Length: 497
Ligand code: GLN
Image 1 (tube, rainbow, N blue to C red):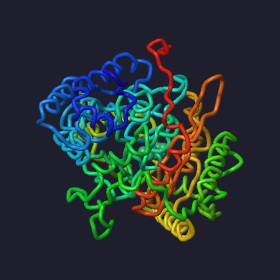
Image 2: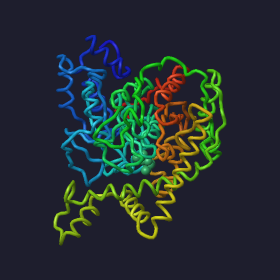
Image 3: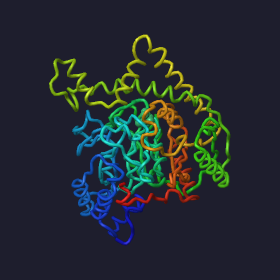
Image 4: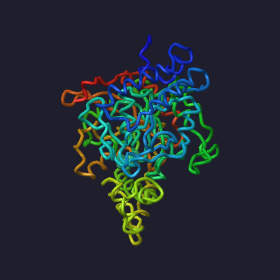
C-alpha cells in the first residue's frame, strides 16, 4: 500500500478505494490489524465486528456497495442499536442484548457505504465523564494510558485518536462527544437537538441526547454529519424542513473563511480555576482568530454556573424514567431465582445496574417525587430557560462563542472516582449547550506537558441552533492555520504497560 491509509481523511479513503489504489478489504484489514495490536492497551472496543466488516468490504470491492463513505471503517458507541453484534450500553444489565433493529444513523451510514468495524466502550448508559463507569473495564487515553479518555464516548474518541477506525459516532447528553474528543485530541461535534435522529439511541436524557461524529479532522466531521443529519419520521423530536430548515451540504464552503466573523468570549468560561494551560490554549486560539480578521466580542452568560445543578436534575429525572424499562422482563439480565414479581424487578435491577446508574436513578426519582417536583424539577426547567436566554442574547452579538471544553486536560484514572460531585462539576462547560439545545464542537487546540507526557488541549465552539455548517467552517479556518489535528499519539503494543 503506497500511502498509510489509516492517516487518510474519510474522503481520501473513499477515493483511494474508488480509484482502486487500494481495496476496501485491505483498508478494513489494516484497521483490524491495528485494533488487534493496540486495543489491548487502549480498550476502546467492546466488540470488533471482524467478519461482517470483511463481508461488507467485499461488497464495496465488487461494486455492489457505493456511496460517499464506501469502504470507510467507522466505530459506533455501544449505546446505538445495531441489528448485528451486541448493544450493551457497557452495562451488565444489557451484557448479552442484541437489538432487533438498527438505529436510523446506522442505516444511513450503511446506505452511504460505511463499514461498521465495531462497538465502542462508554460509561454505563452514557452516565459519566471518564469511561470509568463502564460495567466492563475502563478505556485508556491513547496519549497516556494512565489517564482517562474522557466520557462518556471515551471508547469512540480513543479509537479515533489511536487510528483504530477512520471515524466514530458518539452521543452527547451533557458533553459526552465534546469532552472525550478534547481529551483525546480529536474533533467532536454535538449537533443541534433535532438535527440528527435519536431513533435507536438508547435513551439517557431524552430532551438532551444527540448523536454526532468524532473524527480526526473538521472535514471528516462534516462528511459524517452529511450522512447522518436530517428528518426521520421515527423520531418525533427530529427537525424537519419547517422546524430546522433545509439540511445544508456540510462539506460546502469548508475552504472559505466566514466573512466578518464575530467570535464571542465569555468571562464565565475563562475562569481562574481552570488549568492555566487550558485557558492559554483558548487565548492563543482567540489571538489567531483575531489575526485571521475576526472581531472578538465580549459576551455575558450570567447563568453559566447554574448549568451543572440544573443539568443533573433534568438528566437524572429523565434517566430515572427512561431506565424503568430495564426490569428483567422486557430486556436484558434477569435474576436467577426470584421470590415473586417485585423481587424479580428489584433483584434484576440491583444485579444489573452499576453504582453510578443506581445513584442517578435515585436522584432522578427523588427530584420527580410528589412534594419535591416543584422544588427541583420545575425549578430546573426554569433555570434551563434562563440559560437558553443567555445564549440567545449572546448570539445576537456574535456568530459563535469560543471557550474551553473542560476545566482541565485528561485526568488520571481514579483521580475523581471517590467524589462524584467533583466529576459532575467538571462538566461545567459542556452541559449548557445541551440544556439550550444548541450545537457545539470541540477540536484540538494545542498540547500541554504533564509528568513528561504530551496531553492534548481543546477548544470549544458553540453556535446558535442549526449553525453546524458555520461551526464547521470556523473550525476548518482554525485547522488550516494550525497543525494540531494532524498530530497523533505514539502507541505501540509495548505501551500496553
Ligand atoms: N458527564 C455527563 C453525565 O455524566 C454527560 C454525559 C453524556 O453526555 N452522556 O451525565
